[in-house]
Image (cartoon, rainbow, N blue to C red; front, side):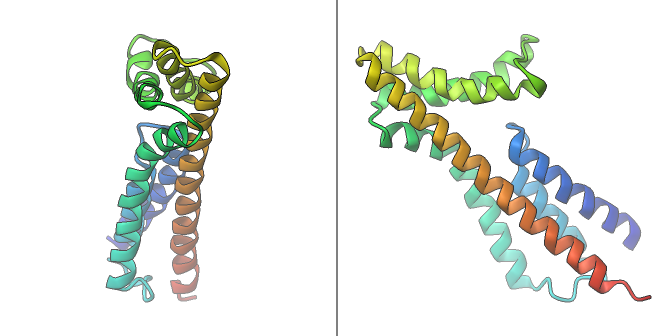
Length: 174
């Protein structure tokens, strides 16, 4: 049983890192699941209840922020509510609608996922009759917000993977 939990813990930690980059796949919660599974094995002496709670809360906060930060970036770079809505709609379209229609832009649709919030913010600003320069600035803010969200998820996933691997290496009795 320990072997099964360990294998699933490693898989979850790795899939969590992939989920940091691939939208629609909740990276931080999957990474946290890896730590949780490992905590049920004898190899996890330092995975305390406090650690599990803190990392679980962090996973939830980062997941929520990942949806909020692109809109915040749009607003911070001078975007209007139309740009914020456009950024959010662009993200949803690039994650859910385009793949259903069989449209993937670039490897794994990553280009579409990057362009979705960017173009959505720009289109939202243009509908709002924002001058072109300001609309591009708001779109750039959306892109920066997307990158910040991805970086947060990636750092979290890597840290969790380090804890999983560290506990496995230190916990193995030779």
